[in-house]
Structures are given as C-alpha cells and as structure tokens.
Image (cartoon, rainbow, N blue to C red; front, top):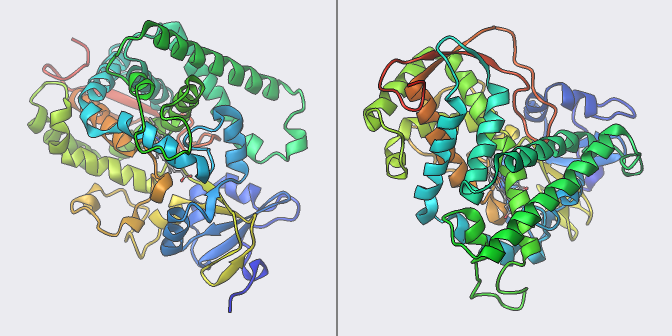
Length: 454
Ligand code: HEM
C-alpha cells in the first residue's frame, strides 16, 4: 500500500507565508543537497507546493518516463512565454517529432565546423587581455559563450550589432525568469519597469530571430551552421505527428531555445571552472602541461578533442560540483506511485542535480574539486545528471562539453589564472547557477601560446 502526499515530509527551512523561498535563495545548492531528509520532500513557494525527488534511482525513474512525468510546472510555464513550444518546453506528445528533426544538427559529423567557430570566438574575446589584467570572468564568459553559439548557429554572417542585441535580450529574459517563477501569476503582468523590460526583450528577440530565419530561407545558402541544419532537416519517420520538416516559426522557436538553454549555462560552467583552477594551482599546471603536450602551440581542432582528456575531466568535475542547471520541474499527468507515495495528477515535481552530485555515497568528499575522480568514466549513469536523463536529456550535451574543452584549451594554453580575493563568490540570481562577479588576474604564458597577445 502506498501513502499520499501528506506523508511526504516538508523540507527544513520552512517559514509561514514565504515557505522555502528564503532558504533556497540563500544557498540554492546547499539547500537542495542538504542531508538527513527522505527520498522525497515537499517544497513550498508561496501557495505552490513541489515534491523534490532526492533519491538517485527515483530521479532516473522520473526522467525516463516522460509520459507520466511530463514537462510542466512553474518554470516551464515561464519558459514557454519566451520560447513558445520549442524542443525544451513542448509537451511529450509534440516532443518526439521535434527531437528527431533537431538531432541531426548535433550529430558528431558537424563538430569540426563548430569547434572552429568556438575556438575563433575564444581567441577574439581574449585578444585584448594583457599580462597582469584583472578580468571579471563572470562578465566575459557570457559574451564568449554567446559569441561562440551565435557563430555556431549562424556562421559569422550575423552583423555584430544584431548579435549584441540578441545577447542583451537573452540576458534580460534570463534575469527575469527566477523572479517571475516565484511571483504569483496575477502580479506578474503588472506594468512595472521590470515587466515592461521583459516584454520588450521577448518581442524584440523573436522579431530578430524570425528575420534571420526568413532571410536565410530566401537566399537559400547552405552554410555549415546549425541554422542550415535545422532548415534542411527532414524526418522520414514521421508517422502523422506533424509535418516532415520544421516550419520557419518552429526553427525560430528552436534557435531561441538553444540560445536560452545554451548561453548562460555554458558561461556559468566556464566561470566555475576558472574559479576552481585559480584556487587549485597544481591542477591548473597539470592541465596546462597536458594540453600543451597535445596541442604543441596550435589551436585545438575537433580531431584533438579526444586526446584532451584531462580538460574533459576538469569540465566533468566542474559540472558535478557547480551544476549550472540547479532545478528542473515536471508535472504528473496521471495518478502514479513514486517511492511508495501516491502522487495525484497535477503534482509538481522538482529535480536538482545537486541532490545527486553532492551525495557522499555517490561522490566521496562531495564539496572538493577533484578532476581525478573522472579518470575512469563512471558506469552508473545516475550519478552524474548535469544534463538530465532520458528522452528529454540535453540535446546540446556533447556540444557543450566539447565547446568548453576547446575554450578551456585555448585559455589555458595562453594564460594562467590567479584569484584576487579570498572572499566567497556572489552568485547571480538567474535561471541558471553561476557567479555574479568573479575577478581573476590573468598572467600571459609567454611566446608560442594560442590566441593571446601577439
Ligand atoms: C553546460 C551547459 C549546459 C547544461 C548544464 C545543460 C543542461 C540541460 C538540462 C539539465 C536539460 C534537461 C532539462 C529537463 O529535463 O527538464 C537540458 C535540456 C536541453 N538543453 Fe541543455 N544544457 C547545456 C547546454 C546546452 C546547449 C549548448 C544547448 C544548445 C545549443 C542546449 C539545448 C538544450 C535543449 C534544446 C534541451 C531540451 C531537450 C529536450 O527536451 O529534448 N543545452 N539542458
């Protein structure tokens, strides 16, 4: 026999009226990973209740059954306002066709073009750095990540002011999402300056991206980029679940989705990685020596990526310790049982990689940065979920890891990073989890380095 929702314990840190909002905003990973609770706990945000799944096996059960645990919940309602019914936000019944149509854009064969775009973006973004400069990495990495993604999506044919405008609009939208997620619906449409900024950014972004799609469709060129891959995608398997190719509106939805899903997350990952390397000079020097041994002074190419294995270990460890996606939600579509608890239809479910990644049974000394733990790849896939799991797993997972390995290799070949303060880093209040400011000193590594000052 199973018990109902009432038997699920309330997470610690509950305050009447506010619920868990304050506890969570104080320290999101610490709150979500806090030990001594059950497999499932209840979270309250104002009038909203969510069930946080903490047990790694139950996390897999939820993520692998996207029919029973479909996309939904407050985060997705907000995200849908921006990206329409794109791949990340569409419900289960519209997902399979879209996934089949988008997948070819991410197949490994396209990687050489993307690696070149990413490496060029990293070299451009760091070209003005000088030996001894103090750089706010948390400001540079979003610019680098969106420059890299813009080049990957549109080759280099987008005018600089259009890329800048897209970046600004995305930053505005992501900055608003968490506040909107925690604001009850009737209040979020009040004509406050914040809401008006959000609406302006939302409309302008769609207009810009739709214009780019229409322009490419009209001139018909086949550039080696993600946009061409999406425009030419055709799905031979389509079984009546929609047209065999993506409409222009769907292509715009996907591009906005990729920008939203892929910029801030990757930038957060890159920032955390440099934060940890600056605090662990031994690891940083080992990474430099390993990278130099593979690249011998030239920029990384796609063919080098498998040999840059230590850089990939560093990326995996940063993804574990500082998962940029800190929470995602699902909604129960039909009454079901999870861990012996009966969940009625409509129950909101929350998953956080931190409950898994900071679990000492799965990762001993969980708060220590130790890339060595990834020397042998893990076979228990449930232990590492920075990209989710199951049918809705991140479509950009390999791209994101390889992009980050390429950027890291460019940076570490030319620069050494040291901290300028011992003070704890402040975290941005945004949809993903990344530093708000992170000032590091950069030291040029001398002649023969990649992409630094000539
Ligand atoms: C470090 C970087 C990234 C992290 C940590 C990350 C994480 C995630 C996670 C956890 C999910 C699953 C969410 C859920 O199940 O509700 C997801 C989905 C998704 N991500 Fe990423 N992501 C990253 C980079 C990217 C990039 C670069 C792109 C595209 C270029 C991208 C596109 C997507 C899309 C389209 C989905 C939805 C997939 C589907 O529902 O079929 N992500 N991502």
